[in-house]
Image (tube, rainbow, N blue to C red):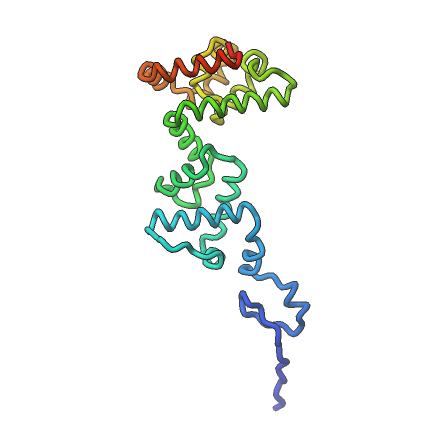
Length: 233
């Protein structure tokens, strides 16, 4: 019986150890680990890698940072990269706090990329953030609206569509500090439809904010002073 002569395959993939006869074949070869290594510079992957390390630090008390190759070899690679895409797309309020929030939430990794989880975080954070940060973000959003519409930013509550303002409130871009403590902000609420008011209700917990304003009269005075200075009535 004749023996089959095996051809030597001198070119081996450093990632999966598969061998090839031709160097050109090796170059175009794309195993899963090689694909992951090649993706390192992508923003979603960078975010996923950062969250991966943060996860082990919080959940397991790990002090040593895991290498990118450790990340590539992890069975959770795709889930963390998917979350990285989610973070990149929604651009969350205080990203690092949101990352810590989901890690500590007890929610399974494959359920981190949900609008419901982010909204829960967002509405809690809006109640806790410093008034200065909230007002600054709102004014920045108004300025962006002004640039987009060739309008004076302090006319936001006067001329922005109710749909735009509804969207901005739901996404935390307009704070109740300004909305409820300016005449034009309150007038905007009166323009909104029942459906729009229902949409903003979770982020506009009236019982909480009325109580907050009573507890923080100095902050309310500051907001009104800033609003007056920039021309928001």
